[in-house]
Amino acid sequence: MHREEEPERLLVDIARLDAEGEELEGEVDIIDLDEEFVHPFGGVRYRLSAQQFGTEVLVRGHLEQDFTLVCSRCGEDFDTTVKVDDFTVSVQVDDKTEVVDLTDDARDSIILALPTYPLCDEACPGIAQKVESSTDDRWSALDGLKVE
Image (cartoon, rainbow, N blue to C red; front, side, top):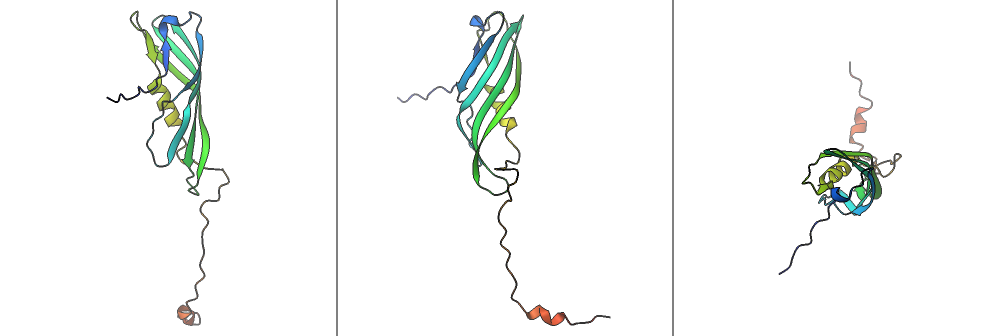
């Protein structure tokens, strides 16, 4: 029997969280988009600070993910890095809470940071327009017409 691999999760282990807070850093593959124009590659890289204040765990930090996007002007593929510098999550916990799962919050933050109209370059001229000159002379007869 083939067993599906468990998806990766971004977890904070509350049991081992230092009272002064803890710095968390790593990479986790949590973006699973099936979109025609948006292709993630690699994992989400994170640098987070987690600290518990009574019944609340506050996590703040930086997320980034590499993507191949399609330019909205020229239609060409290009690679870019989407960054979230102000990732902040507050989670209520109790004595029974062992881990805090940040996977959905991190995924949503990265997806919301994707550009609405991605550009390969701010100066992208767009798709080259092909201008055809008209060789139809039938309308030139009207050029001399005077209307009163």
